[in-house]
Image (cartoon, rainbow, N blue to C red):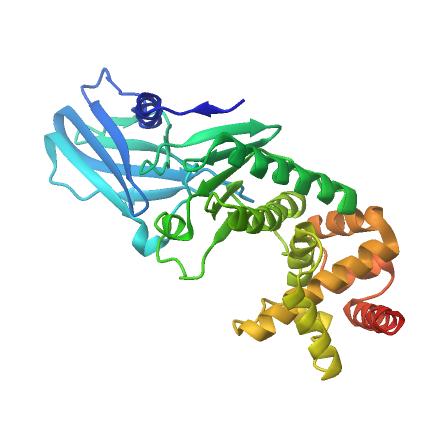
Length: 371
């Protein structure tokens, strides 16, 4: 069901996100009077505190934890600089221009620990602050585990994008057996410029990004026919990265890039003409990239990157067409256990990356001859 998030609701949600982490009145006389966290999106998160005691407050520490998928819970601790006093008002600013930002829809859990000269100690209960881009009046639509947010365009625009999202999830299950395990939020900005305004030092070409550990995707899509078609492909691509990350998340190893990007390219549908042209050119000039090389991050050069994405699509397609979805799902589960690249391929298919390189090339040449 589509619902408009009116301004009053936004304000209520924002205030709820900044709920004080359990104001403390201690028998010792050390009391937390107020606590707040306020987001200046996307650049700063400002934590503020006031407290009093019968004796000088001598130590204040802020602890916070970013809420995301982690192999181990990581808590950051900030030692607050202040002049000891019986009454303290202080703040600490998390400058994300120095550390990198957080995506809209994410959250941070925080709490304070205070000590006074009488060795009295108080720790507030954890509270959560939501990271929201309040520049726009967001509306939302939810289906299954996916919630899509947008602020420009009519209801049919959002429904069309949601339909594409569900279609991409269905195709991913059919091709690989991989399913969405946790809820996902997709933020649709009205254009790339608005999207880049939500990020810290974005690249000029940024049009969409998947924050895989947060279960969040942000894309700039103008509500017109041309951008809608492009947006559907981008959603399928980024959503696949997010689902595959959930399925293979482990502390030992990442996926080889060709597999991660091949799955995402396959989710978009048929390979577009520019990628086909890059493949044919490389084949004719004997400059195809080896599977082993494609396991590393792709080149920053446009032509080489285009070829890398195209080959990843073809390699993934070869594995799915030749060996089926069950083997692909087995491969993903093997990677989830932390297996190395060659080790995983050997275990599931009986060949390593060099063997895969020879096999997909032979299949590609045979298909080219027959056509």
